[in-house]
Image (tube, rainbow, N blue to C red; front, side):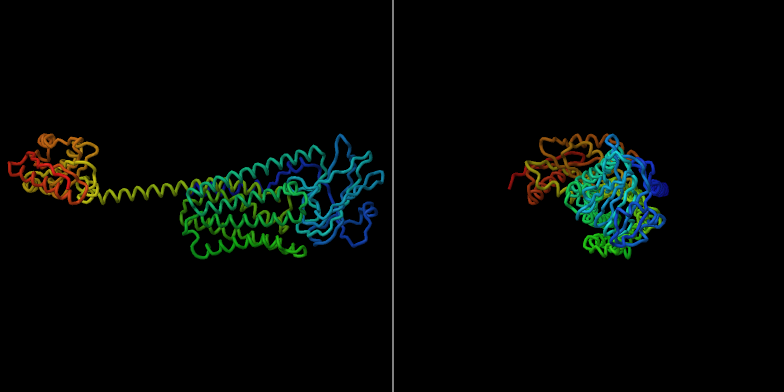
Length: 560
């Protein structure tokens, strides 16, 4: 347990390092970063004048501090020509905005304007939820770019992560994001189908919640990647963002319920179980709140969503603590699986609250984190099913052992009288019953003591077990009396049994013999058993009366 806990902690630290690093090299591959400055739209401003007056813009203020509204955002001077052999594009991150106009100034004084419609930046959306506007190709160099952002909620910023990219860099970025999102979507679909099939077979509740989580993740992948704008080109970008929040909230709620049903019941007893259900409901509810919130309240809905997501830590950390204290079998694999999502949720929350700098990869870390969680949770499910199977096998073995104890004579290991009758009565066809009784067994007990007598009984039982065919039944009926039941075809030779007994070495070399009475007949009912037993018992009495150590047979019984 200690090694597994160290392994889980190491995995968490590794996840934190990878997510916090937010590889700058990958960002550089998508183009050259652009510094931008901001000016609040006071109304009636002329873009043709503003684009020539960069000094009016504030370059030092943090955008998110300016609040919602309409803004002008201007880039620093570019001085590069967009030409046929190397067309240029402006790329920036998708945010909640009613619309965007882009004015591009060239060094010959020409200004080219592009405007969005009611869909917002949907026509410009690329994979990774990045807006991309191709700069018109002209002989003159691009001087600077001016954005006019209308209806910005400004929860993260106004224009985030602006970059100047070539067509090759844009294609490379789309291919990279396509590979990431396609792999994740394929993983979600495969895990969804597999676990639904397992649920049909095994019916564990945690499998249903896991399937709900992976289905939500697939939907989240489609909306957050920007692919939804390609599938539904008429959808407004803000509506896509609403769906993104809704699905992420549903994923968070399903993930909490998966943990709630995955662990042993004792882990979530008391307040923690109630807290898990409340947090799961709040997560799903916060997504619905964002979906239904009017535009003027979207900042409040976003803050509510961010705060609710801290509930992951409120539930998961006490869960891990309790699981460690209770020595849960599932602690280590759960801790490793949830390392990436918890770290990603914490970092994204810190980013949303502007306590750490915004980053494109941190903003998209949910995909990587949940991919790791989905994979490790599938391992956790396999591990859980394996342990459940082992528990079931042990229970079945225990049940079988208990059944055998109930059916077995504890001294000799043969069937007891009750089990013998259960298996004997109803056997088809004619049966041969032999009743064997050790001769003068009281003298054996008096000579060897009861321990010695018990050993004689065990030796005789082994002799019978080895002397009869596989299909025959052998039982200790009580005291020193034994029964052997077989069909006529199985040929249990009573004389052979007596001969083997005479040659078997007994404790202290005491001589032990037996008498056997046999009778054959049908054995379909209890009445026929009683008749058959009376016949074999009468033959046994005849063998005893004739001097013992011999076999006597009764007349065959006829069917009633």
